[in-house]
Image 1: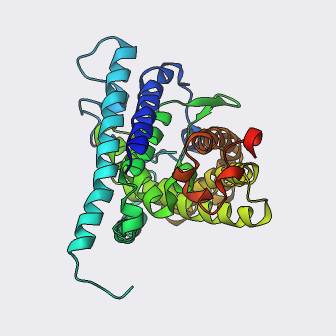
Image 2: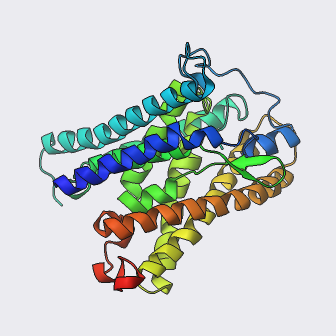
Length: 106
Length: 226
């Protein structure tokens, strides 16, 4: 990959962090489409507590950070960095394992 | 549209989990091919952008909100194989780190949000592109149509899962109508955000838009230079 493309990726990540830290403060707190339909049609009668609801970043808040905007912002930065690394790493890993495979007819 | 635990019964959730694992395995195999793997950083960026965009719910009619699903955006930017991997990564991180989307419903959510919009939605994008001019406007028109449809199709995915193993008692027809009606409105937001994003990438780096790789560069970079 060229330097120009890395620069593009870096700028894109800064845009993502701006969304997760800045714009997310203005996020609507209304139920989303599925939640709305679920409550109106009683689809949620069997809903169970989330298995990771006690995690340090559950519900996009950072445990131990009291300011709501900052709490969400820190969670957002962690999410952006982790998804970038995992998705990029997954594709990189796929390439390495593909190369190790014996040649196959194409 | 993240399904929590307990909305859909265990057999249907497990079956969706099996489909999700199989689909990811196929996508990973495709991703290992050289022309795709060079786009690993772009796939990471697409995943990070979708994660961030999903933190911003926009209001739609009558006390309801929606957020970008991003599957069609991912497929247009990096192709359906890498795009489905990007959205799957987002869903896994949201589920495990942020308690968003049930652990037992992860397969359902991957099918609805990572597979349906990237594969069926992108198929629709390709079909629309055949009947519109091979220009910037044509690519953006196909993006808008497919983005809107991808959200409605994802909501139908949930409806089918509900029909097969939903724990609620509401009739399937009523759920289908309610789901599609609200998600067509949310889909308008999806179309706006997706089209703006693809337009911005086309304006700066048209070579990074997988869905427009067959279009001459001079027809992509904007009306001023077309």
